[in-house]
View 1 (cartoon, rainbow, N blue to C red):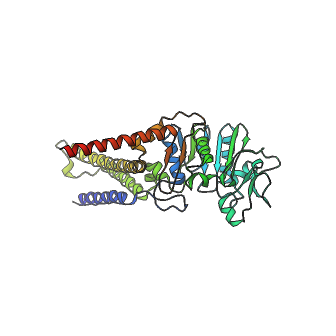
View 2 (view 1 turned 30 degrees about the vertical axis):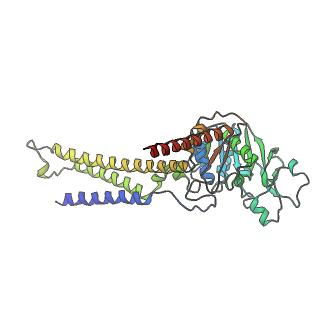
View 3 (view 1 turned 135 degrees about the vertical axis):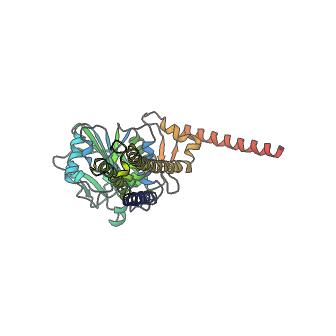
Length: 385
């Protein structure tokens, strides 16, 4: 009887673990960064958008060492942490081997000792006065710096043995995008992250350029998975694995397996489990294996349900902007990676994302007109009835 009490107790603990899992694993809200919140906006939304194009996207796990031996483009937009010297060196070696680094960071002045820039022998400096020809100089203005430093401009400076900086584009808010070669690879630097993700840039030609530039990068495109919590939307299974309640759930499964093996190998067997030949009853094996199987099955079922729930939440954000209804999302997925396609991606405070193009807008309008005609026809039919 004592054995059954333990099994009943373990059963209650297992059910409690399931309930805790359902109650605690959810979408993180109110991130510290102002461009993050409960809806997918800012960098989080942009990465979601990137994953829904035909671009191959891979997230590296916490440390850049995952990139060793791989080739592609590393996208860092306002990274949520500073890189150590060892990590910066790993990224530089990776770029020198023939890859591309895109580094957009709004807080370059606050972090002048950026290990990543230092590894490439590039620094951020401040002019004493505004240059006469900012279009010809790799000048970098930062919105926050403009408020704190009375519009004193910043600029990228190369060390004595550093690379040659080439201005790529003069952006709104007097920001620029610069590039330089490192080994066989290329690095793009800018403080345009805020320009891309924090404001409505519907009429911004520079933003169109930036988004098309990123979408046309040589793939696969890598970006950091653990970025201020957005990974729960992009990869819910990873978040579940990091959840304490899920760890407890798997610990219970492990304990159930240990108990099963212990019962199987016991020398002292209760009389009720012995058959006429003196061997352990097959029924006990079936019950033990059944309990273990159902525990594993229940855990996988919970994880799958939660995973589907996350996917459903992500899909609901797309539906908020009628992208699925108008077919725009499908059009984005099927888009050929042709340069200068003039497809514009922009994020606003009120919408998750919008995807506009002359042909796509025309298609969307046709869909809206078709919907109106259907509604009118339905009303006429209802009146006739």
